[in-house]
Length: 89
Image (tube, rainbow, N blue to C red; front, side, top):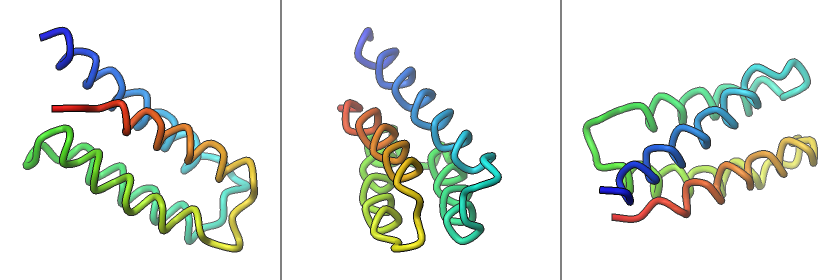
């Protein structure tokens, strides 16, 4: 059960990081839209935490390839990915 609590905490921290990126005025609109969609997917209880995390990691990898992304936003996205990668079954 400690793992489940730890997974939920990691998910919460990742969502907080993504929310900070989406709320930042200097984040490009296209990236904000992608991040907002990912947050909605993460909050969807239809799938397990680990499935939602894995899907989001895959999609964030695509988002980080955007040439218009400021480097500090990319770094924050990698922090969110790191949190999501710690989520296990």
